[in-house]
Length: 173
Image (tube, rainbow, N blue to C red; front, side, top):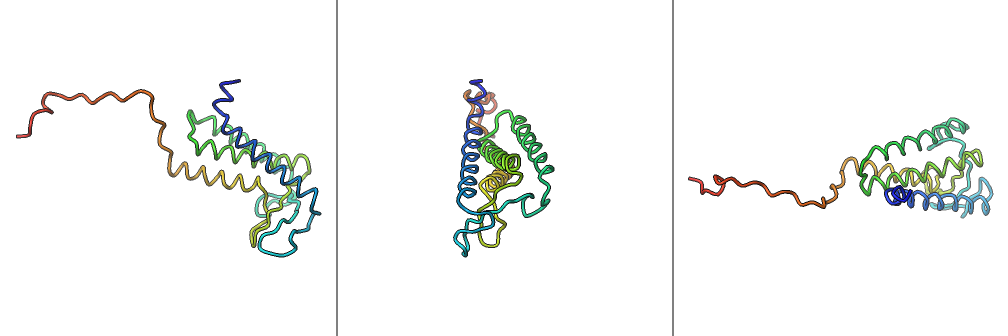
């Protein structure tokens, strides 16, 4: 158990912290702002309490059971992906922590409420939440880590010096 905690501590801490932030912000919105209302009433940035029974961008509206199953499968895929890396770099671990936090956050909403609470309302964008932002940020970081891989960690053992043959020491003629 201790080896597991040491190996996966960063991913678990990122996921737990953002899951708590997601659920905490949703609870504050649910307790303090009536469904369908915004604060302030107008403006580019508002807190607008909505119940999202679909997925991102209003797709699959009312398909909570399908989206709950898809979330559970997605979490499984993320765990398998992470486990397939013998020594994942910091960016991969960060991205997986973010995506797991978001997936668990929205899955919790679907299981507890039957819909996802969204509230961040910025200009023309669809209204979203911390879990959604975590998933998107995690996907972007993962894409960057794939396109631009992190350098391998420095080896503890020095590389052996290249063998020099006597012919290499002779000046060129």
